[in-house]
Image 1 (cartoon, rainbow, N blue to C red):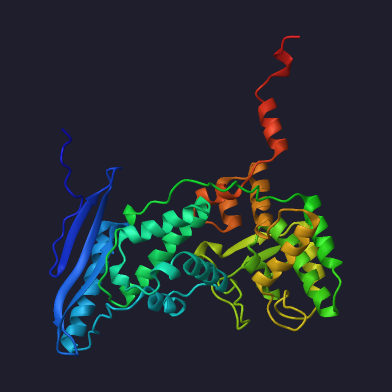
Image 2 (image 1 turned 60 degrees about the vertical axis):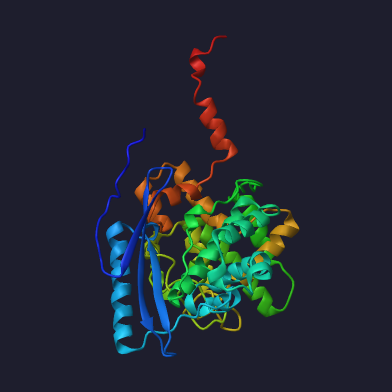
Length: 395
């Protein structure tokens, strides 16, 4: 008989109910629910309820601290008579309409989740009150999508639901779902792309961009993108980091990625912060990257060296469309990010230390850095043949 296990954390707080669930991996999940009654501005009795899950925090203690902070704030608002009445009748669509305001993110990421929502959630669940959505509803939407989409795409549906519930919590809507019960079927696995690019392929794509017919403005912008690809290839920069480079960030020997270099907004109003704190880094320049930077800086006197012919910032989505157009015409499976993957692969194949690779890539976790590297046929051939000592092979 299996011995009963006690929860690993004990702390009692007023107006906070704690429940535990033991996973099949013997990991305790704590659910701390802040709950109390109050009278709203309509004179009716309401219940304030908000749940905090330990899987979203570094420790059980931090999860409890978050619940306590929420309780204290809500009790103060109750005392002041300003606690808002819960809008429990809000539909999934109404929650989604608040997405852009509640969850700041890049334009590309927002468009991605907007596509997921409209294709896999809106039609069947958009007009239903969010509080009526159950774990079975979420699972059903995922199962239905898995019939046509690959495993990676279906995972985004679960994440989209999680974001919707997060917005509901911001609105103090009483609703709780155990997302740990939701599973993504492991079917229709998408074949893994190589995610690398050879120097010959990159040269063909850059040549196609530079020779593209069009107006002077279009030729100028295409040439900028070609320069950017080479810099990505030999510096490992993210596309957004390249297009946001300014003259003050470039020294004689390298590039300094600072906190104000990040994704460029599509509306061209300015820059956002870097992707992560570890993105702030210094990258030495090799001869090829140095030449590309010198060439592109000679094209104009703008402080931001990748500003377009009309003086606006280069939009990463638009640049990706131009690159995809030329790569498709050449029959090459290529994305801008493949240059970053190739940079990581070269570092790995050349035996660069883990710490150096992490810092050059701007990663906080070695597993992330390792996931970027790819092998190639030449490296595999050398590895297999290295298992044999040819001098000892019997003739």
